[in-house]
Every structure is written in structure tokens, then in C-alpha cells.
Length: 381
Image 1 (cartoon, rainbow, N blue to C red):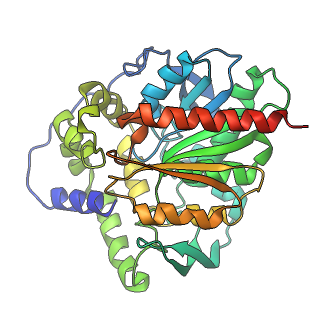
Image 2: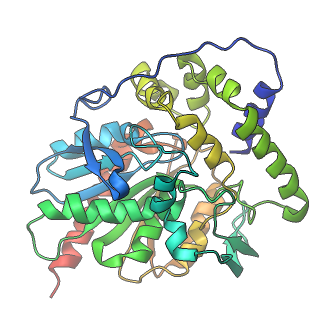
């Protein structure tokens, strides 16, 4: 993520021509999956795009995407796991993909903002939290939970969306006893998924993580944060003020393809379909402002902090690509210190930050095994 921020700064400070593009319309069918684009009316009449694969009687899964992408990033899981009989959902988080993106300071956005009800006007800082390190060690930091801009595009809003969608859409169609949803997440989607379980554990039976992200731009993750944060805040402010031209310059297919190849070890998976499915929603009104809000989000919950509070009856399995350039393998492996909830950690050879798209043949069998374990646990007297 620091690399992304620096790249934006480099482009902002350079002269170039900007081509204005007309925003794409929302297709009725996803180009990436061939599934219908459906829409959930959430709080304050905000529209959330989602897709569903598989039969309604199947075991339900909800896929949670990562940074700057959308539900199409789960294109292979939606189709392949759906064909295996699972009821597979993936949605575009609020502000992402084809979901609504109101201005962060608008009345409707602030009514949706889950931080408002959670924190009110009070500061929200957790003191003395044990976090990991790149080398697999531990350190203690204070964790600032609240978005510095008061933006609704935060993990508490996104986690509330996951809970509401699970209750209103998925579980409304599940007929077996004690219905619950399995959350499957990639990258920073892990934090939204964990928070949903922490806030409404009765809705979920566990979390399957594909490459967690530890958020290196969070103030708790930065070395010498008191010195570094004022500089970073200035850079973030400049991006919000002047960054649209940089965004327009970067938001073209060839550039997006090159950016995607950084976290992908299996670069052949970065095909034209993926590029178009991820790029088109980023050209819709409001998308760039959500990107800049997210680049300014040096706060919020962190995975290791969340796992210290996690319900013991909600197991977590983690798989990760050993060739991930963004996430330290030693730090992922060190999650075994939360063994009361993190029951399994599996490293995958030859794949990067997005194994679900790079090598679904490695990820799907693990996920199915996790689902079978969940089913066995549910059948126990």
C-alpha cells in the first residue's frame, strides 16, 4: 500500500495529458461470471450490487473482497463453488464496485456511517494492543479505530453491511436448522469479516481467510508514527485535493493490468476480463473519492487486535500465497498464537496476494474442507 501511495504522488507531481472517459453503465449480467447483477436496498435506500451462484438450498457462503476491487474478484469461486452445490454470494461493499458512493460528508452518507452510532463524538483508541511484526514477532501499540476524515467508508460500516445482507438476503432463503453464514475474505476484506463476527456472532459460523492484510498505512503499523503521520497526512490531503488527474491517468486498462501484476504471482490470471471487471466500476461517479478516502484511512481495527476478542466457537482458517509481495509469510504464520480460534494456517506455493483468483484449484479444496468441518460441528448434539 505504501507503494500505491507513492505512485499516486509521483503521477500528481508529473505533467501528463488526461483523457476524460464516460462512466460505464451497470451491466445486467457480470462480464466476469455470467451471473445476474442483483441489487440489495440497504440503509437510507443505498443500493448494493451482489451476485449469487449455486442453488438456494446449498450451504451459504459470503465472499468479501479487498481493496479497490469488487465482487467480480470472486469470479471463479462464484461459478465453480456454485456448480458444486454451494450457495455462493459476493457483494460490492458500500462505496465499491457498482454499489452506491455518496459524498462522505452528505447527510445520507453520515446516516449510514456506523462509526457515528458506535463512537458518537468520543475518541476511539485502544491502548496497549499486541500486534505482530514482519519477522513474526510481537510489539505493543495503541490502535486508533476511527476514520480521520469521519468517512462512512470504514470497516465498521462495511461489517454492518455484511451482517445486514446476511440477515436480510442470505438467511431469508436458508431452510436448514440453525442457519448461519460462512464468511470468506481476501486482503483487507478480512477486517470487515472479523468485525461482523465480533458484532453479530449469531449470524456466522466461521471465517475462511485468503491472504490477510495487516494495513501498513495504519498509524499503529508505522515506525516512528509521531514523526511519520504528520507527513503522511499532508500527502493524503494533497491526494484528495489534487489526485483526480492522477486517478484518471492510472485508470486505463494497460496501467491497471500492470498494477494488478504486482500482487499476482500467477500473472496469466490477470486477463482482459479481470481488468475490465475491476476497472469499469472505478470509473463510476464517486469512485475516485472513495479511493482517496481509503488511502487516507490510517486507522480502524486490525486483524490481530480483533482475534484477541474473537468468539471461541467461530473457527478461522487462513491460507496465503507464499509469493505475496505485500504480506509477510512469517507474520501470517505467527497468527498461530491465536490457536483458540485460528485452527489452521496453510501456505500455498507459487501464488501471490490473490490465490482465490490465481490458483482456485488450491484454495477451493481447502474451503470445501472448512465447510465440511462446519457442517460436522453443526450436526453434533
